[in-house]
Length: 466
Image 1 (cartoon, helix red, strand yellow):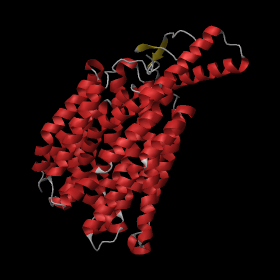
Image 2 (image 1 turned 45 degrees about the vertical axis):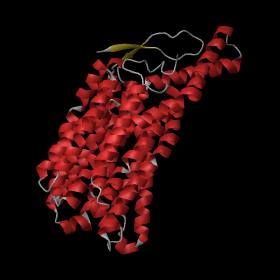
Image 3 (image 1 turned 180 degrees about the horizontal axis):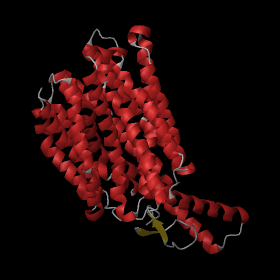
Image 4 (image 1 turned 120 degrees about the vertical axis):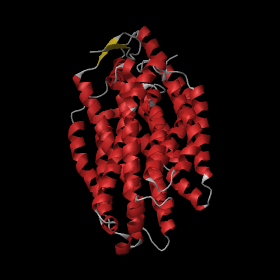
């Protein structure tokens, strides 16, 4: 069993070593957190997988292209709610704890998924169907912003420090795993049902299943442990507050408390904005590549290359299943060589391959499989270290709120809009802009990563000091 030394933030006292152990409780908490992420991302991706069918059911079909664009616009609006959810739930997680938020966000996602599965169609209630769909996606986006940020923080905090990259990679395993499950169910439904049946009611099945899955996740999360890193910081805050209230603190303790407060103040005023800006920029290339290949590639193959919908779903399913198996290996590599080199591998590889991969897709399913496999394996490299890299950029009492705002803002602006922008580029007959957009943002990722310091091995208890 691996032990690692960490130092708690205790105001007014020298930092003392504390042993962080990979306990059975930590492993159970890891499983509960990542399983929840798995099903949240399954519910989230199911919308993109069935976008053509949702467009037909929930919008005016007089113009099919317009209906699809409207569906993807609702997809993007859900992402725009994520920064707000990241800020609100991030602050709650930094004050009340990570476990509390992970349960609440799961309940919200489950309720929204159930409602989407039961919504009446445009033909039944007209524009109100579109409005209700938009509302459900906004609720999901709000909850998703808090869920993602909290999971990234939580897993990094419970991980053994020397294996933070590998443990953190499991968060992205869950993200890609949820996508794989969504595409697998999408492929199964389109194989078993006729196209008319899928359009009539089959597209609802994944959302109803998501609500059922959530009950199992809630059971797992009820037994989670709170993060030891958060508990240590909370105990330090309580000790400082108690000392001030009784007036019993010594001059040395008072000086220490002031110094500790100065660290937080200095970070919040001088470095928080910089850290957020760098994370937003670093994530931009990762998220646009991820959502182009996980949420739009199948729609592109079906609507623009006349690929069979069932075949397209299975190709995405197979390619992402293989890619997600590489995630722990990328995370482990980052624990040995650092976070920044792994990001550079993703960015340079994506810049070089993207123009060729987008151009090779035609109506033959294998072309989508090969293109998606290469692209998503590169995305896996960067995704594997997001939890560790972002958590190592913020101090404990600002970590979830900082990640929640920076990550959610970047994903909303660059990732959530990617399917819509890609469809719009195609409508303008500017296919080349899809690749150009990804390449430009990957260059931004390289620049931000070059500015950020290497954080492999950093102590999460002392992030923000010095």
